[in-house]
Amino acid sequence: EYTLDYIFVKLGITTETVEHPILMTEPICNPSHSRKLMSELLFECYRVPSVCYGIDALFSYHANGLSLDGGIIISSGHTTTHVIPVVDGRGVLEQTKRISYGGLTSTDYMLKLMQLKYPTFPTKMTVNQAQYLVHNYTYVAEDYFSELKEYANPTSFAERDRIIQFPYIPPANEKTEEELARAEERKQEQARRLKEQAARLREKKLRELEATLSSYMELKTSKPSIRKSEFMARLKENRISDEAELDELIQKTEKSVQRARNKLLGIDEVEIKEEPTFPLVDIPDDQLNDAEKKEKKKQIAAKSLHESRQRQREAKELVRRQHEAEERMEEQKRQTDFEGWLSELKRNYQTQLEKVKSIKRKKEQLSDRRSHASQLRM
Figure 1 (cartoon, one colour):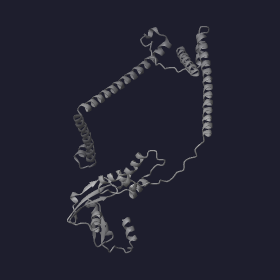
Figure 2 (spheres, one colour):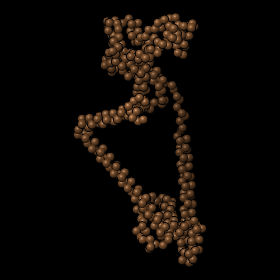
Figure 3 (spheres, helix red, strand yellow):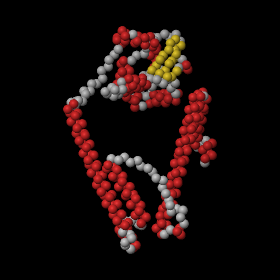
Figure 4 (tube, one colour):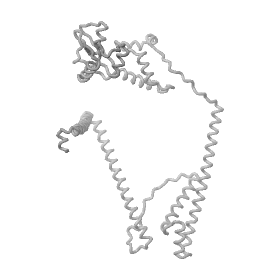
């Protein structure tokens, strides 16, 4: 309604009603409901005396004075093209064909064509630029193959060739060889400083690890010369619960020290994953002391977790092998019996499509309270 108000004001109609007959174009196969709503709007709001609906392509055919005996109209729009046969001056709408190709499709095709043909183009072509090329430098060939022959001829090609100038972007100031050499030298100097800084940090970390390992070893060697209560007190001062944890810390620290030394010397070590061992799991509790019993509980939990992860890895590996075997069988079937493979693929696709449609139908039925499915759910 706002659009029609604007149109009538632009046409100079300032009266409360429109006292002129209205001619309005509509798309092909316009639903009767849409036409009914438009008619109600024109007759009730604007009180027009009469309304006539028609297709713009047929109006253009008659306006250009073309043959009324017969013809074919090719009407291209923004997203679609309609082919309308004309017999005895009337359009045969029941024989009209719709093609999903229009001006927007031509613009997209031109844009993709230019991007593929000129991948190193300095500027990025926009949709508006591609549309400008389509509107100003393209045409519909009456005889496509003869046009191709004309373009194959060097003489006619030179006459038809067009050069399009895009917006010029001046190149950036190129550096001289001396400037490039100085920049490379600064880059290497910065890399050397970073390497020296990283080496100093590695040396500092190595000294800290060696000091930590030395304190752990000193604590370990002091056990025979002091009482057990004093030894446990020293463990608590270092936030260590028992001797087993101390041994574990010593082992981890020794590995860290070795890795840090290798890294400092530039030795690339290959990390070998050792299979975890659980020596206390199979030993009866009456043969263990309190600390070993606690360690046994930890080993039982760790063993259970390790076995669970191992089963998961084996299951994933089995699924992967099955998937690879299915892919090999499908590829072999595709190569040996292509028609059978294709028909099976189509059947599977149709089955999945029917499932999707069934789910959609069920949703639609459930949304309708009077449907049988909705009543069963209630």
